[in-house]
Every structure is written in C-alpha cells, then in structure tokens.
Image 1 (cartoon, rainbow, N blue to C red):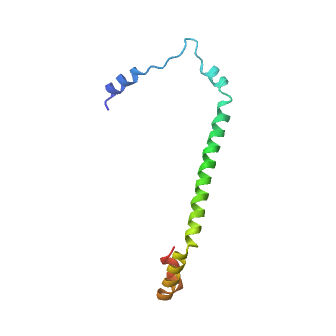
Image 2: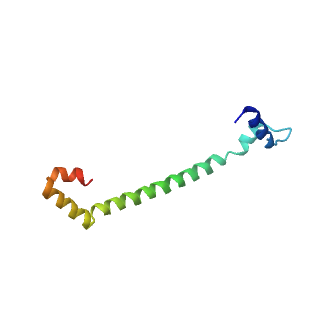
Image 3: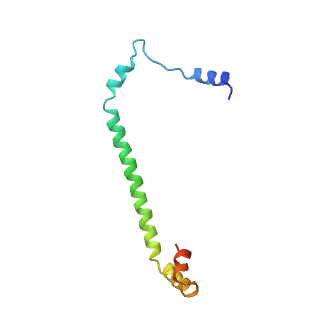
Length: 89
C-alpha cells in the first residue's frame, strides 16, 4: 500500500476529541480498567488451562485404551520392549 493511499484511508477515520482533551485525565478515569482487563485475562488463561487439562486427560485415556495396550504388547513381542516404547509413544 502506498503512503498516499494509506493517508487517504487514515483520513476517513479521524480521531475525535474535545478541545480540552488531556491524556492525564483519561488515564485517571480508567484506573478500574486494568483490574477489569486483568480479570478478563485471568479468565482467558483459566479457560486455556482447562482445555490443556482436558487434552492431557484424553491423552492419558488413549494410553490406557485396550487398542494401544494390545499394540504395545505386540510390538514388544516382535521388536523388544525398548523399541516398543519408541514405536508407541
């Protein structure tokens, strides 16, 4: 995108502020915003942790699945126990 084209697009969306706008006033008005953001961030992290826990539980149940147990034992018989561990991770 050329600079001129970018400027034209930028001018379509001007920033609207009052004449007496002061960044310090805005910062003092949003003292509760970081705590709200922190709370949302924590909820987001908790949701990811919960999904990770579910995936780990699914992986553990896959390892205990009769199919995988039978596969490991068959590989262990044919290739040895060490190779079975590498083959069936």
